[in-house]
Image (spheres, rainbow, N blue to C red):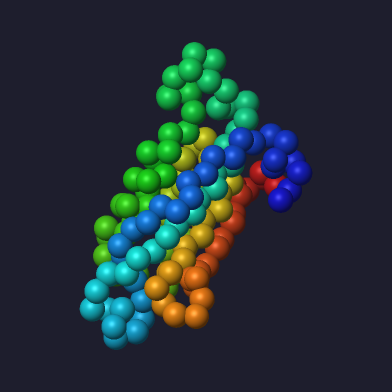
Amino acid sequence: MNDTLLRHCRRLFLRGLTVQAHIGIHAHELQATQRIIIDVDLYVSLEGTRPHDDRIDEVVDYDFVRAVVHGRVAQGHINLQETLCDDILTHLLAHTGVMAARVSTRKPDVYPDCDAVGVEVFRAKPGVL
C-alpha cells in the first residue's frame, strides 16, 4: 500500500458481508441466487474524520457501505463479479469523505475443492496517490 495514503488516511473496513445475489453466466446461476461474500476497505481522510464531539456525523458511517452493497445487489442480475466490484467501488468513491477503496467479492459455493473464487479491485481518487 502506498505510504502516503496510509500516513494521511484512516482505514475503515467491513469483513464478510454476506448477501444473496443474482450473479453468474452459467445456466444454473441464472436460475437462483447464490451466496456472495464481500469485503470492503475504505481509506478516508484522517484529518477530515477526527471525531471531536464523538458524533457519527463526524465520520464515514458503516451503514453507508452496507447500503451501497445492498442497493447494487437489489438492482438485478449481474453477470460478472468484476462488474459487481467495479459498481460498488464507483459508488463508494462518490462519497466526499472516501479517498480510496478496495472491494473484494467471492463466491464460496462454486467448487467443492476450494474455499472460494473471487475478484478484488482497488482504486483511489485522482491526485490521492
